[in-house]
Image (cartoon, rainbow, N blue to C red; front, side, top):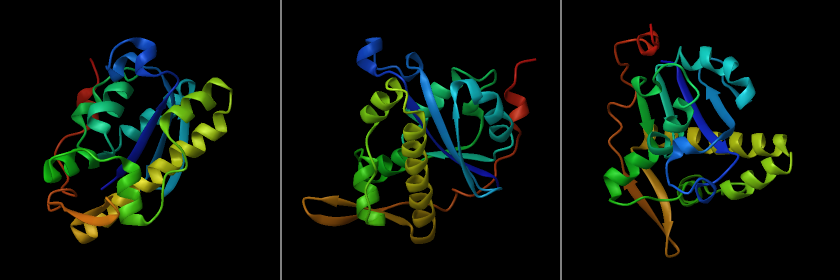
Length: 191
């Protein structure tokens, strides 16, 4: 099964566009981990044509808040429909089990005993300052964390998070996570 773990950074924020609709934002960088090559790569908006052939061969997209944020934003740039690819959103899985959303940083700290190297608003500022490599490094690190959380959950059936100084567990039903779905991305392209 070819899995693409991914994350997106934007060049603007919701207050710039006046509405909390991810599709109104502009992509600065998308970073991925491709399970077939075991490599991390990043793409700017101008380089997306190099990303599409990889995405089109994916059996599953994996992200954190990806169903609500990353996929709708990335779909804005794609001629097909990325929602047709099997997707696993770790935040959605957490919310379904725990009943509330958690920041990626909290889950990374609880599960992996490490923190993110920055936050999204910093990445927007770096982008505006022309620090593209810094944005790519930050985005790739979020992908690395998401990939490691996915693998941990798959192996252990739980993720952990910090809450009032205590580490707590979130039980997750991972039985169907790696089941391949029938179909192909080529069915999402317009004819």
